[in-house]
Image 1: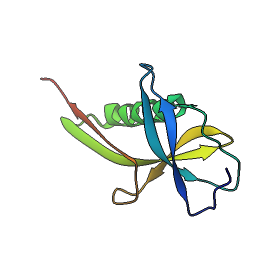
Image 2 (image 1 turned 90 degrees about the vertical axis):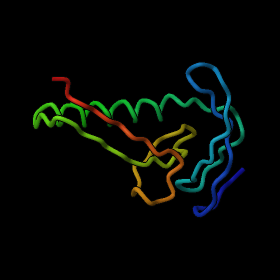
Image 3 (image 1 turned 180 degrees about the vertical axis):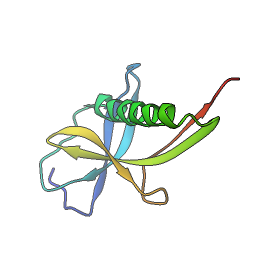
Length: 104
């Protein structure tokens, strides 16, 4: 199936615990995607990478409490799911809130 750039589709995705969910995926260009089950690993890798980068920065400034909120849009690139960071009020499919509180 070929998507236009402004369309999105529901794609079956397998989570790390083997559960299957359908994810609304934005097309990043014209390519045949099909409906085979996609791995969610690219998205979780992106979340972990973002969290690690934020944690490193927070450790340097050492606040007593910090909260970070960001949105991710899930896209398909070259047949794999990828996460794109979007504006907080954008059309994010995932909204992630990370909080840290420094223990005394």
